[in-house]
Length: 200
Ligand SMILES: Nc1ncnc2c1ncn2[C@@H]1O[C@H](COP(=O)(O)OP(=O)(O)O)[C@@H](O)[C@H]1O
Ligand SMILES: [Mg+2]
Image 1: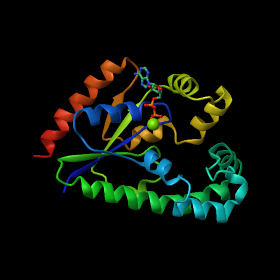
Image 2: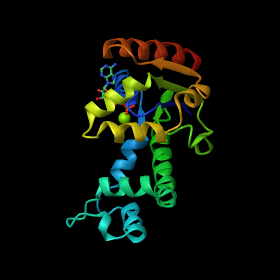
Image 3: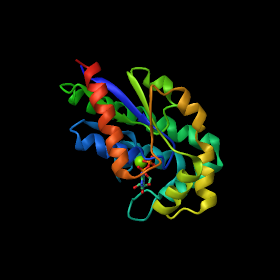
Image 4: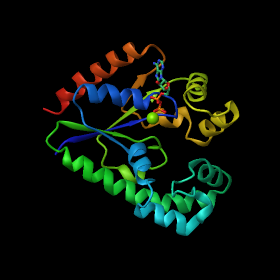
């Protein structure tokens, strides 16, 4: 059975970039965001449940989820967020477990999990927590550049997540991503070499 390394970090910290580095090193990456995204494809069981709970107005005429509208709703209404989580979380977790088991021949598997602080109870089976860290201003700049979000919305999303300090408290290792992507790659390689040794 492979070990499980959780990669977490705030929005825009560089989790996806770190995961690309692991993939390049041949380490399997199971990405909860990606699984969630795939589950919002029209016709999935999760989307039937979302439609039944939140109504047709969350969907386009062609059946696609209107992500922006759903995001606004769950931002404004904590109860709606709870309901959405109750639909999505068990399904996402089950798919993640399937993917982890499929890769059990590897020394370790990376689990990219944006909100680990918030969902620690679901993931106590994690062997090592790797936090990708950068300062809040860098996060903000990256989020605004990457998406069409306004600075206000980006700041709201950062503030809605657990704090930098809370994340660092649960870290077994930290990768500081405040330099170039080449430098980030070097740091991931160093982690990989060290962690692989502990798997022998
Ligand atoms: N060290 C870096 N140098 C330049 N751009 C970066 C760096 N790290 C991340 N980025 C860019 O910032 C954005 C957010 O990074 P990403 O890995 O998607 O963050 P996360 O997955 O944690 O939200 C992306 O557009 C990414 O390419
Ligand atoms: Mg990402």
